[in-house]
Length: 483
Image (cartoon, rainbow, N blue to C red):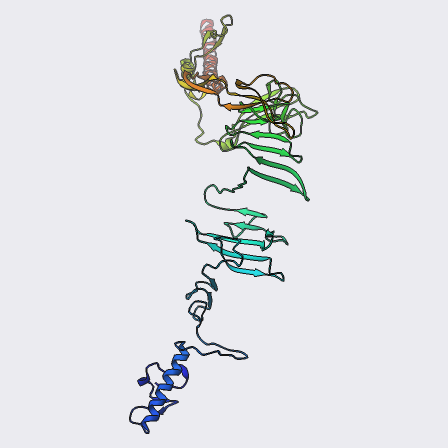
């Protein structure tokens, strides 16, 4: 192969037999020139492939064809894959920085940045790197001042969404992960989320105790609602032993009135009364309640108009299939066994009705539950206990007035009851009574009545025919007698 450039020269001198097709192989004349040229070509090949480094090279500009290596791994240019590596000999990306280097002042400890960006002030570095000191490697970004410590770090200061775990963030901050993605807020005394509007705080979610209570505050950090570690909810109070305690009137409505146009209404009064669809306004018609199944599909409602109330269950034909005419209704009605009875709780009141398990044998959809069923029922053995205290203030320590007592109905001004022990509950077996919806007997009764009407009409037609026939016979007999 002709050696037409330095890149064609071979590291093995015996393989260099020509220069630009001029023969310098063994036997050419003079032999000394041949050997010298061969060694020179080998040396040039060493320079070309980096085996021998140039001493203090300099140039106004330089073009390198092929890979470039500086001190083995200080800098590596991979010309085949168009990659640059710093601290690595085989870069795996367009720019690949590797190796642990401590920051100049050691302020980050084990978090040694691999990349430092500085503006006009070298005391304010922006640092990126990997911390491999623990069991799990951690990538980090840090903006700081070398003299005073941490600095602010802004993401998209000119606007735009930020995504964690997603490349298509749908909001200013979009966190996406597998299963249930957590967001952790870890403070030395607790955690706080503040909600601001135009630079002013409007609300706060806060926790600061070992029990794990979640506290909801307004813009002045006054507590408005609390969910304690037992799952109890207090609204208008700072503690409760009940699953829900509302101090004051609780109203759930679409427009603030004691009724809802299309969503039902719940009114919890201070004395514990519960009203659904209570009161009204100038609207003549509204839904006092709408009931939904587990799929959030409406399956019934209580509808009120100006003069009546309708209790409706879903019955739209679009919800049904396998529709057929109901037959044999009379025989099924005959199988029903109406009774007269009184409830044990009302010995002096006799009424008409059915025994649920007997009716279930004929119209099972009208009956809820099973005959003689039992269920586990929790009951409270000992109520929740706690301490009656006067909370600490800036001027006085907390005062404990009594300990391990049940929650009193009233407290002195400034005192609070703080739960320290949950109620003691036990389980007992109790009857799981059956119930009946007698309105579900109406389709069967209607079908039976229609069957009876059909039989009556058939008999009436038959009787009319027989009456005509008898009248005709009488006419014939009368005619014969006349003859």
